[in-house]
Image (tube, rainbow, N blue to C red; front, side, top):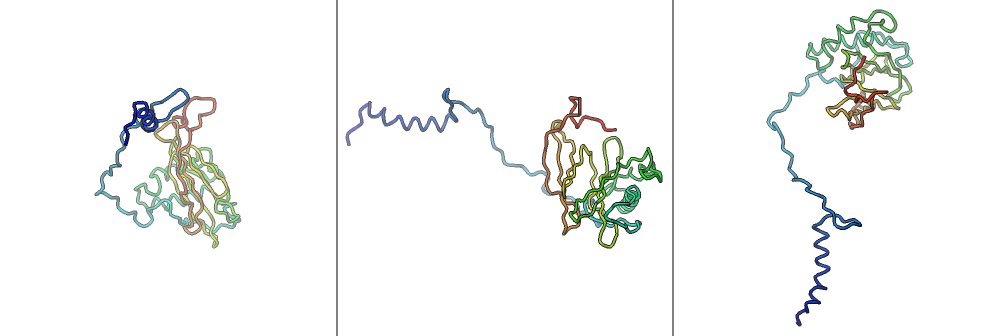
Length: 242
């Protein structure tokens, strides 16, 4: 085979050189080659404390479990309409406190003392830390459920959702303790917005009715941009609640 001339070698090497440059130099734009910089070193995840596992929850120690609230009369209906929300919450808190033995797994230990501030008035009185009741159908059965919350202090709250079963008994279908930056209801979804360690982000827990389990089950957990407080530049996670 006849060796290539210097010009022939240059012409043959040009496509190869171009391919090598394209592969090693990253992306190119109209101004020429561009370096994407150091992309860092990829590390495999490291599992911590692999030999230590939490004990399984004991009977009745799961806050998300549906439970009939004891000590309440049958609801006349339809749904939770006409039921005293403070009495429902008081009976539920009392039963949960007795059940968890003050461990705080089912309810904050301060809840009973906080509820003691409520009077027999329809709304619990001016010092009652129970939020105004909201009636919405979140199970899709055409009847309204009761959504309410007990504020434990200026930040932490106990969120509760109740429904009426076919026999008229009142059952808790969602129990959630947290910093309620926002609670939104749409169709059979209930979204809870809470601050995160990043002041610009909030976590959004989306609960959806699960007819087989008979509870509002966590369906999706996402991050969302934190809305600023109206007329203020303060991030929502830093804002104080009344």
